[in-house]
Image 1: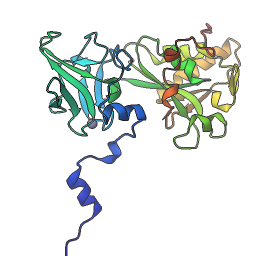
Image 2: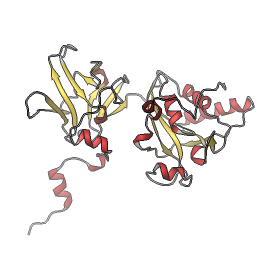
Image 3: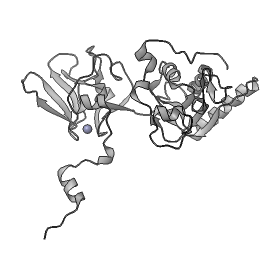
Image 4: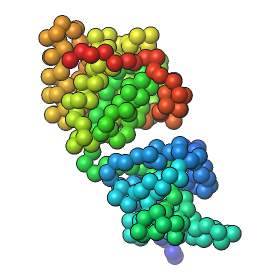
Length: 297
Ligand SMILES: [Zn+2]
């Protein structure tokens, strides 16, 4: 009698740890699974120069290094080399172009072109941003909640040394909350931004100071017209050094007479918000209604 477990079958046919496989959004599926193409000059990594590694969005395998990225002007991230063995080349059916995919999961990346003369390696991997996730080399992460995340994200993203900013939710007790759930004010989450930054370029203190100057830290459980605990002022720290910096800045503000409502709490799980909340003002082409700079230090 032959006996086997599901696990045997699984490892024999698909050597991928499913825990590593990301749930893709509809647009990510369109590009990564259905071999679609993002519009030129729209991806997060087209005009982007952080030092670090680009992973496969779907399976987190390292694919490219920032040292091999160059500006081709084509509207998509361009690399003249891949991490050895990470990228598979397959001629398109019509033989005119060569598709590139992730060796590990088969996810579609884009196309590779030879002989264009951009760099001495004479190779251009033309990759969709949406197929990639960037991880900074020596990055640090900060989380701030200062009312509606659209405005905080917009203003933080313009700072030198900031590698990426994402809008999301933190501090509540429901897993994977939706915007509608958070907006009820009953999940306990705050709207926050996650900021990945290069501490060699900008200090946590500089970002925290800016945080206190682009929202009103004296308002409790609201920020202007946005009312509710989800709009509370909060610093979620990721290290003792961050906590000490935040406490120091609050003390400085209190010494100036501000009655600071900002909470200082350890970081919890960050739940990335729905896609339409990301880069909200950039995509809309308008200025924030909810946040503006006020000098306080
Ligand atoms: Zn992959």
